[in-house]
Image 1: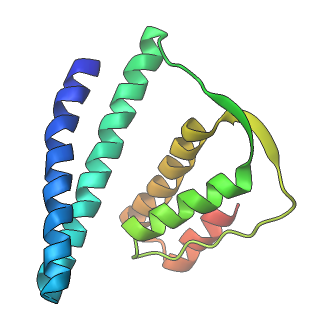
Image 2: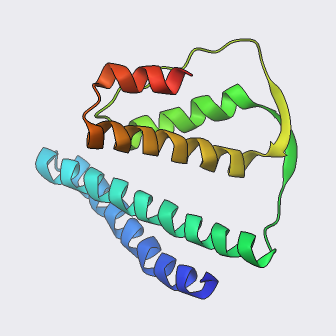
Length: 143
């Protein structure tokens, strides 16, 4: 699985580079249609990269080769950053996050961010599948 994941990521990296180059060019020419289309393409490449990384992580976990880089951090910072990334990729739903007192944890920051990202992605996807309103997704992400 690890080799397949690597082989899939290589062309995506090249594709992402070309998309970024074309985005800059479309902004210079103020071509809104092309700029919007390239933004959508970039979001899809990011989703695919995230999915491939998930497969790679699962493969490492199953083989016992996953490496954790535990550090102390405030979980709210990770949640807020992950929500912001999700908002950029999924602008169709509003996600609200109410911060309480800081909560410091000792864990692998990136792995926790992946779990939160998956949770948000599933909440949005499930809301669309079962027809929940956008306000219901807001409630789900606040719990």
